[in-house]
Amino acid sequence: MVTKSVDLRSDTVTKPTEAMRAAMATAEVDDDVLGADPTAARLESEVAKIMGKEAGLFVASGTMGNLISVLVHCDIRGSEVILGDNCHIHIYENGGISTIGGVHPRPVKNNDDGTMDIGLIEAAIRDPRGEIVYPTTRLICLENSHANTGGRCLSAEYTDKVGELAKKHGLKLHIDGARIFNASVALGVPVNRLVQAADSVS
Image 1 (cartoon, rainbow, N blue to C red):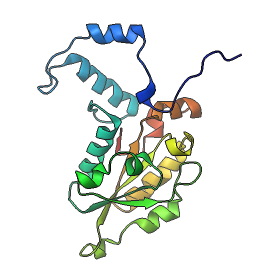
Image 2 (image 1 turned 30 degrees about the vertical axis):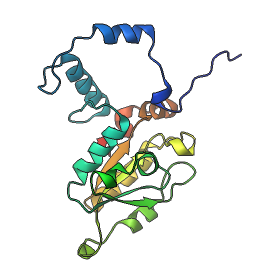
Image 3 (image 1 turned 135 degrees about the vertical axis):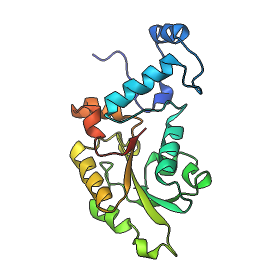
């Protein structure tokens, strides 16, 4: 008999345990801007290792992590990002990629399992010869797990296919990984394998 339910809607509804609060209260801290905060440095290093990426950067929210990632890959105003029509970056993050970064979203229909058809993604990539009139496609974004489709998990194989498509067209791939650890547990696949094809992950 289940006596307690676990709310996995978002990291924003979770609460720290007493042990977590104690760890926060006693953590060694210093100036993170000057790179002297040993706790932040250890966190960034550990997360980079878990993700199989070169480096990590601690930021205050998932929205901020996604925004920074999009802006790093789309560093020219008028760039375009292909993303799901039902994904967090497109719907819930205050249009920040457009408002702050001047990045144009090009939504592609999300399937019921959170994926986008590979053919539709490729069809959405702009012909670079039209850059005089069109935004320039620079990035594809995925979300894993995909919140608006009930937390459906994207397989490593699917992500690999999108990564191959991105490379074929000289694009970057970013993964909104706000629930990537949930996807890892549900699929029984290490996190670094789920994001192996990605250039960045939040």
